[in-house]
Image (cartoon, rainbow, N blue to C red; front, side):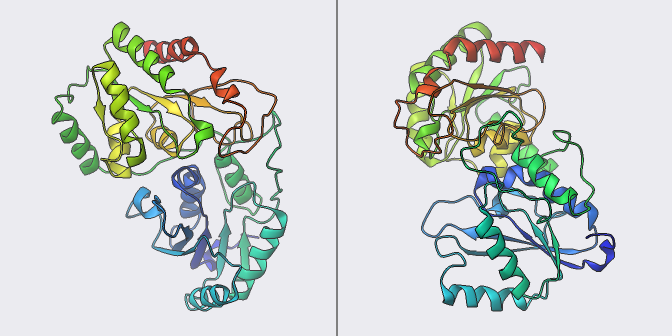
Length: 358
């Protein structure tokens, strides 16, 4: 299907979602760019109208990956005829010859077929990422479930794109020397530029209530790590996490609240100076993993196992059990049983293990 890569000159990559969805797709993005180094590559993504939303342009490097970004309203999608017609006309004018299809692994079969028909109508005649794609049931909970990053790589490999083995790729957001220097300057303002200091990134919030480990548990973990190792906690997250960060720091008596105060890439650069991430299953966790910061991640059992774990080596994922595994609920209706089954002691011990190893 991709035997002659030289014929692909104008490529459209289709991937939608938020912060974590973009970051876990990075191994596939880089594999596409490596395989088609001279092509003009456009990313088509959704736009969450009326919502605070981290778009790929805020995350990805300015150069070396995509040449153009296009978007469509997510709350309308391809369903209404006028939007369908607008997208059809808009995309046809770019004369794309190849589609790289990187829709999420839980995309329904009906929507996959609909997508194929739509992209055929804009004049594309070469498709990568459809062959071998299997529809995963949202409640599938199997030990063989693979990480979303590896799933997307498999979709490319099934169409002949050369990809690295599972878990061996890199989620590289391409931080520049200037961005790292700016992170150091930001830390210097808090007298934290000394590299001997143990900076720990905490991400205690989430836009999804069913993913949030109890606040009192974070209080206990922070107290213990400060007392034992003298760590300095930095709170990461969006502006919606600022109040939670203030409460934690008030109880610890130490720390910096960066929630809502840093751009995505600046947060990534500051994360690169942290020895550890402690937090929930969020896009912030994927951001930490993208700069090789070891993660102690606390997961609920709402989704498929392994699908959204921090990608790469040296991470620890802790998740309790509950009879309602795979619920996919936005708000838990079982008193966060799976999350509350993760003990404070297990989180502290995992942190100590990683920090001592480092």
